[in-house]
Image 1 (cartoon, helix red, strand yellow):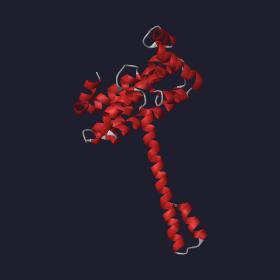
Image 2 (image 1 turned 135 degrees about the vertical axis):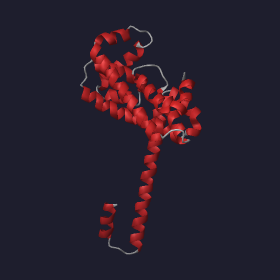
Image 3 (image 1 turned 90 degrees about the horizontal axis):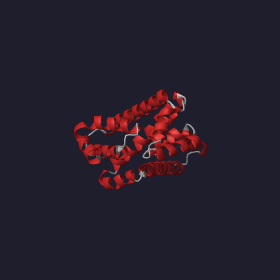
Amino acid sequence: MTETILALIPSYGLWVIFLTLLLCALAVPLPGSMLMIAAGSFASTGDIDLYLAMTVAYAGFIAGDQTAYGIAHALGPRLMDRFRKSNKVAPMVGRAERLLDRRGVLAVFLSHTIVSPVGPWVNYLCGAARMKWVHFSAASVVGAACWVAAYGLVGYYFADRLAELAQLANDGMGFIAAFAVAAGAGWWLWASWRRYRERIVAEETAEGRPLQEMEEKGQKI
Protein backbone atom coordinates (compact mmCIF):
# COMPACT_ATOMS: atom_id res chain seq x y z
CA MET A 1 0.00 0.00 0.00
CA THR A 2 2.73 2.46 0.98
CA GLU A 3 4.75 1.80 -2.18
CA THR A 4 1.65 2.23 -4.35
CA ILE A 5 0.76 5.58 -2.80
CA LEU A 6 4.31 6.89 -3.05
CA ALA A 7 4.55 5.82 -6.67
CA LEU A 8 1.55 8.02 -7.49
CA ILE A 9 3.11 11.21 -6.11
CA PRO A 10 5.12 12.24 -9.21
CA SER A 11 2.04 11.93 -11.45
CA TYR A 12 -0.87 12.77 -9.16
CA GLY A 13 1.04 14.31 -6.26
CA LEU A 14 -1.29 16.99 -4.95
CA TRP A 15 -4.47 14.91 -5.20
CA VAL A 16 -2.76 11.94 -3.57
CA ILE A 17 -1.49 14.12 -0.74
CA PHE A 18 -4.85 15.80 -0.16
CA LEU A 19 -6.93 12.62 -0.19
CA THR A 20 -4.48 10.59 1.90
CA LEU A 21 -4.27 13.22 4.64
CA LEU A 22 -8.05 13.64 4.62
CA LEU A 23 -8.61 9.90 5.00
CA CYS A 24 -5.93 9.61 7.69
CA ALA A 25 -7.80 12.19 9.76
CA LEU A 26 -10.85 9.93 9.44
CA ALA A 27 -8.88 6.99 10.90
CA VAL A 28 -8.40 5.21 7.57
CA PRO A 29 -5.10 3.29 8.00
CA LEU A 30 -2.93 5.02 5.39
CA PRO A 31 0.76 6.05 5.69
CA GLY A 32 0.17 9.77 6.18
CA SER A 33 3.45 10.54 7.95
CA MET A 34 5.50 8.61 5.41
CA LEU A 35 3.64 10.33 2.58
CA MET A 36 4.43 13.79 3.98
CA ILE A 37 8.10 12.94 4.39
CA ALA A 38 8.15 11.57 0.83
CA ALA A 39 6.43 14.71 -0.46
CA GLY A 40 9.19 16.81 1.08
CA SER A 41 11.75 14.50 -0.48
CA PHE A 42 10.17 14.78 -3.94
CA ALA A 43 10.08 18.57 -3.51
CA SER A 44 13.83 18.62 -2.89
CA THR A 45 14.38 17.12 -6.37
CA GLY A 46 11.96 19.53 -8.04
CA ASP A 47 9.23 16.97 -8.79
CA ILE A 48 6.66 18.98 -6.84
CA ASP A 49 6.59 22.39 -5.18
CA LEU A 50 7.28 22.15 -1.44
CA TYR A 51 5.02 24.96 -0.27
CA LEU A 52 2.17 23.94 -2.55
CA ALA A 53 2.46 20.34 -1.33
CA MET A 54 2.41 21.50 2.29
CA THR A 55 -0.58 23.75 1.65
CA VAL A 56 -2.52 20.92 0.02
CA ALA A 57 -1.57 18.52 2.82
CA TYR A 58 -2.70 21.06 5.39
CA ALA A 59 -6.02 21.52 3.59
CA GLY A 60 -6.56 17.76 3.49
CA PHE A 61 -5.67 17.42 7.17
CA ILE A 62 -8.11 20.15 8.22
CA ALA A 63 -10.85 18.84 5.93
CA GLY A 64 -10.49 15.41 7.51
CA ASP A 65 -10.53 16.84 11.03
CA GLN A 66 -13.69 18.81 10.36
CA THR A 67 -15.39 15.85 8.69
CA ALA A 68 -14.61 13.52 11.60
CA TYR A 69 -15.81 16.11 14.11
CA GLY A 70 -18.99 16.74 12.11
CA ILE A 71 -19.81 13.04 11.75
CA ALA A 72 -19.36 12.37 15.45
CA HIS A 73 -21.24 15.53 16.38
CA ALA A 74 -24.21 14.34 14.32
CA LEU A 75 -24.19 10.71 15.45
CA GLY A 76 -23.16 11.33 19.05
CA PRO A 77 -22.13 8.60 21.52
CA ARG A 78 -23.63 5.86 19.33
CA LEU A 79 -20.68 6.15 16.95
CA MET A 80 -18.12 5.89 19.75
CA ASP A 81 -19.95 2.88 21.20
CA ARG A 82 -19.52 1.12 17.86
CA PHE A 83 -15.81 1.95 17.81
CA ARG A 84 -15.37 0.61 21.35
CA LYS A 85 -16.87 -2.73 20.31
CA SER A 86 -14.18 -3.19 17.68
CA ASN A 87 -11.19 -5.12 18.95
CA LYS A 88 -8.94 -3.39 16.44
CA VAL A 89 -9.69 0.21 17.30
CA ALA A 90 -10.88 0.00 20.91
CA PRO A 91 -7.34 0.36 22.36
CA MET A 92 -6.71 3.54 20.34
CA VAL A 93 -10.07 4.96 21.35
CA GLY A 94 -9.18 4.25 24.98
CA ARG A 95 -5.86 6.09 24.62
CA ALA A 96 -7.62 9.03 23.01
CA GLU A 97 -10.20 9.17 25.79
CA ARG A 98 -7.54 9.17 28.50
CA LEU A 99 -5.62 11.92 26.73
CA LEU A 100 -8.76 14.00 26.31
CA ASP A 101 -9.76 13.50 29.95
CA ARG A 102 -6.34 14.64 31.19
CA ARG A 103 -5.63 17.49 28.78
CA GLY A 104 -8.96 18.78 27.52
CA VAL A 105 -8.67 20.90 24.39
CA LEU A 106 -4.88 20.68 24.59
CA ALA A 107 -5.32 17.00 23.71
CA VAL A 108 -6.39 18.07 20.21
CA PHE A 109 -3.08 19.82 19.64
CA LEU A 110 -1.04 16.98 21.18
CA SER A 111 -2.88 14.37 19.12
CA HIS A 112 -1.98 16.28 15.96
CA THR A 113 1.72 16.46 16.81
CA ILE A 114 3.44 14.31 19.45
CA VAL A 115 0.85 11.53 19.73
CA SER A 116 -0.57 11.71 16.21
CA PRO A 117 -1.70 8.04 16.02
CA VAL A 118 -4.64 8.88 18.29
CA GLY A 119 -5.48 12.08 16.41
CA PRO A 120 -8.44 10.73 14.39
CA TRP A 121 -10.03 9.24 17.50
CA VAL A 122 -9.64 12.51 19.38
CA ASN A 123 -11.45 14.20 16.47
CA TYR A 124 -14.36 11.79 16.79
CA LEU A 125 -14.45 12.05 20.57
CA CYS A 126 -14.51 15.85 20.47
CA GLY A 127 -17.46 15.78 18.11
CA ALA A 128 -19.34 13.15 20.12
CA ALA A 129 -18.70 15.04 23.37
CA ARG A 130 -19.96 18.27 21.76
CA MET A 131 -16.72 20.15 22.43
CA LYS A 132 -17.12 23.72 21.24
CA TRP A 133 -16.29 23.87 17.56
CA VAL A 134 -14.23 27.03 17.94
CA HIS A 135 -12.00 25.43 20.59
CA PHE A 136 -11.60 22.23 18.61
CA SER A 137 -10.84 24.06 15.38
CA ALA A 138 -8.30 26.42 16.96
CA ALA A 139 -6.29 23.53 18.40
CA SER A 140 -6.72 21.52 15.22
CA VAL A 141 -5.43 24.13 12.80
CA VAL A 142 -2.37 24.91 14.91
CA GLY A 143 -1.54 21.24 15.46
CA ALA A 144 -2.02 20.37 11.79
CA ALA A 145 0.25 23.24 10.74
CA CYS A 146 3.02 22.00 13.07
CA TRP A 147 2.66 18.41 11.84
CA VAL A 148 2.71 19.28 8.15
CA ALA A 149 5.65 21.67 8.50
CA ALA A 150 7.66 19.23 10.62
CA TYR A 151 7.29 16.19 8.39
CA GLY A 152 7.47 18.11 5.13
CA LEU A 153 10.64 20.02 6.03
CA VAL A 154 12.37 16.96 7.43
CA GLY A 155 11.68 15.12 4.17
CA TYR A 156 12.92 18.11 2.18
CA TYR A 157 16.20 18.67 4.00
CA PHE A 158 17.02 15.00 4.60
CA ALA A 159 15.86 13.53 1.29
CA ASP A 160 19.04 11.47 1.00
CA ARG A 161 18.11 9.58 4.16
CA LEU A 162 14.57 8.65 3.20
CA ALA A 163 14.87 5.05 4.41
CA GLU A 164 15.89 6.12 7.91
CA LEU A 165 13.13 8.73 7.99
CA ALA A 166 10.59 6.11 6.95
CA GLN A 167 11.64 3.98 9.91
CA LEU A 168 11.30 6.95 12.25
CA ALA A 169 7.83 7.66 10.89
CA ASN A 170 6.79 4.04 11.35
CA ASP A 171 8.10 4.08 14.91
CA GLY A 172 6.17 7.26 15.68
CA MET A 173 9.42 9.21 16.16
CA GLY A 174 9.20 11.49 13.13
CA PHE A 175 7.96 14.46 15.07
CA ILE A 176 10.82 14.10 17.54
CA ALA A 177 13.25 14.18 14.63
CA ALA A 178 11.49 17.23 13.23
CA PHE A 179 11.59 18.92 16.59
CA ALA A 180 15.32 18.25 16.81
CA VAL A 181 15.83 19.88 13.41
CA ALA A 182 13.76 22.90 14.43
CA ALA A 183 15.65 23.19 17.72
CA GLY A 184 18.97 22.98 15.89
CA ALA A 185 17.93 25.68 13.46
CA GLY A 186 16.81 27.90 16.32
CA TRP A 187 20.11 27.43 18.14
CA TRP A 188 22.05 28.28 14.96
CA LEU A 189 20.07 31.49 14.44
CA TRP A 190 20.56 32.48 18.07
CA ALA A 191 24.30 31.79 17.94
CA SER A 192 24.63 33.73 14.69
CA TRP A 193 22.80 36.68 16.23
CA ARG A 194 25.10 36.63 19.25
CA ARG A 195 28.19 36.63 17.06
CA TYR A 196 26.78 39.52 15.03
CA ARG A 197 26.06 41.58 18.13
CA GLU A 198 29.52 40.91 19.53
CA ARG A 199 31.16 41.97 16.26
CA ILE A 200 29.16 45.21 16.15
CA VAL A 201 30.06 46.03 19.75
CA ALA A 202 33.74 45.27 19.10
CA GLU A 203 33.81 47.50 16.02
CA GLU A 204 32.13 50.40 17.79
CA THR A 205 34.39 50.04 20.83
CA ALA A 206 37.44 50.16 18.57
CA GLU A 207 36.11 53.38 17.01
CA GLY A 208 35.67 54.93 20.47
CA ARG A 209 31.95 55.64 20.23
CA PRO A 210 30.14 56.54 23.47
CA LEU A 211 28.79 53.58 25.43
CA GLN A 212 25.28 55.05 25.55
CA GLU A 213 25.18 55.38 21.76
CA MET A 214 26.32 51.78 21.44
CA GLU A 215 23.58 50.56 23.77
CA GLU A 216 20.92 52.53 21.93
CA LYS A 217 22.01 51.04 18.64
CA GLY A 218 22.04 47.59 20.19
CA GLN A 219 18.44 48.01 21.24
CA LYS A 220 17.47 48.84 17.68
CA ILE A 221 19.20 45.82 16.13
